[in-house]
Length: 93
Image 1 (cartoon, rainbow, N blue to C red):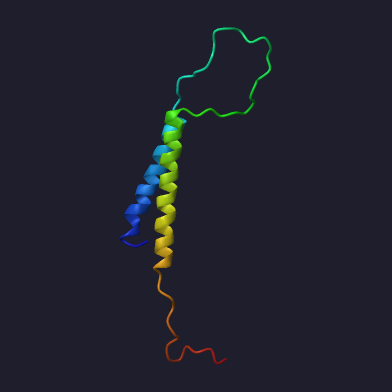
Image 2: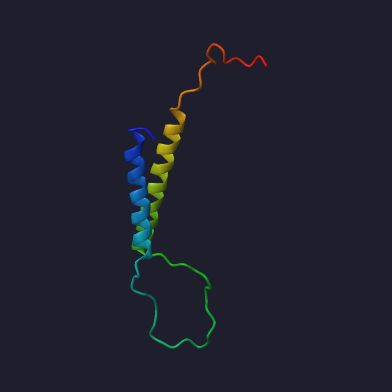
């Protein structure tokens, strides 16, 4: 990593970690609870309902991943290509 990309990578990792921490926080349950269900069947099994905090956490983590990916891609693109072999290092075997 270079001096330019290291702060961006650290910021991206902090954003990803922050998004994961916020996403893991327990939130209040919401929904219609005024009556007892008529059966034990679940209407939408496995469905994940996101509130504003959950969406914000996902956006925060996505921005962090994009920052890390962009910084790593920039660092890889800025690498210099290896130069020609020096004297005595030619492949004449």
